[in-house]
Image (cartoon, rainbow, N blue to C red; front, side, top):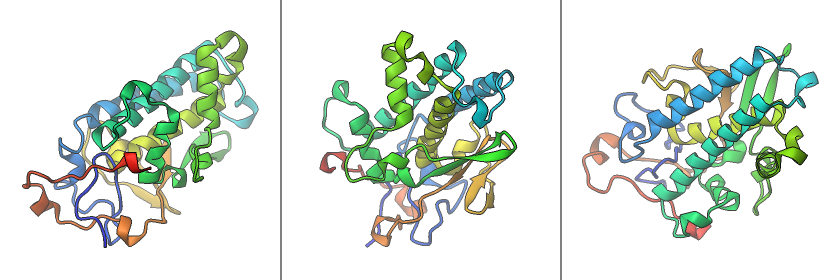
Length: 252
């Protein structure tokens, strides 16, 4: 049996495998689903602008992936804290009883169970003469917590820059940025492409969705079973008092 209400800040395909049935009439834009959508997407796009500024000085290719600098360090920390902010918002919007002051990356790992983050793939077409395939959550394809290399690097350099400055690399920043885009897409679908317009038209090429408004292409999970999918009429559901369910993160 499929789900007759959406979870807050968690996209799922409908039973017909579409994620979006109507642009102007969707649960994704409801303020009870999220009142942080525009702010979160704008924050991401500002980070992308600063990332592109860095690429004015460092050519994005494998030869330069280990390059590190104070500018990369600064943006790396900002990107990862924005990722953390999104994770905290997802947990707090649903059912999770652990005290927020005690949350850490092992708690954010729980979101993978709700959103299949490990199945998302991100493609960057401005990496040298070829595209770079990014898999920011591949380590989370596991029943138990496994650390993410880019997030571990973030903690290393945050707590001891003198000894771990090399962890603030272009490669880790790029992975973190793709991870941030993934966590946004897992909440807001194609609205993540543009913080200013609700135009959700996008191109699909070999399973990757993209628009001219974003440097990334993204591929979504494909292993949802029917009992995990949504099946509701939002036009009817939106007028009810209890239109959203809370995902039970306590049960994970």
